[in-house]
Image (cartoon, rainbow, N blue to C red; front, side):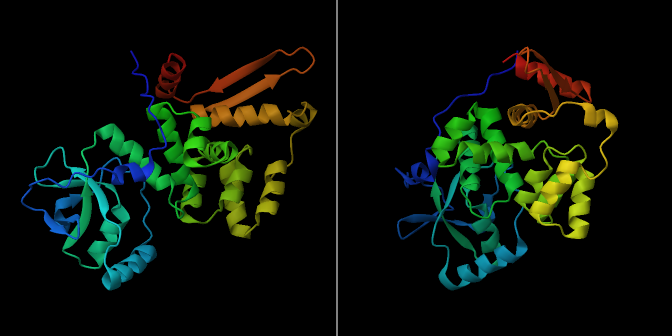
Length: 293
């Protein structure tokens, strides 16, 4: 039987992590410094489930220069490593830890909290979503993780994180794009506006390559996506155009299911047909599990 996602109160944020910090740990590798603990840098390790994967080398070097001059002003939040005694797992602050290595620091200020795996993942995702330099793909994946693993809705996320529901919905729609297009978005070859314009296209990968090679702006990309880059077939032209609401529902379902969805809604009768396409038995099994929740 599929395990249902745990529904948790969202919106605790990082301020909760900073409250009621237990500084009574007697681990031999900790040294007190101005009310915070300091830990040798080699005793800290990233969380393997950290949702953030892309770290700009240039930004790390800038942060390292700042650390050399002023030190680490905001302590990292860590927890005792569940697998290694006298070592710690980073909950929030991996970027500072990486920059501290570049700056060749030996010790890092930390706040130590006792957190379970679920809390670490949820708070790590929230911390990353709140970062201003997070790319659109990372932010969308963060929302998707919060929804899939913890059962949060778009409305709940919007309220807790101070975002609009439309902002979250639009980002989640990006995840229906092919991996090639998402890669361009991660690398900065496409902007969020470009990618959003490609979501409804039939062949977004080919259009993305055209956008990049011709350095098209967002408006030009929208026009290209509307025509789909090619002459529409006569059969396609004879089909009635789907209304905006139907297309919006299609893209929402595609983002949620991560499968191709087509809705044929007949306005005159109110009836219609919903098609969900899968390309493997694993995708079918995942869909069945999702529908059985």
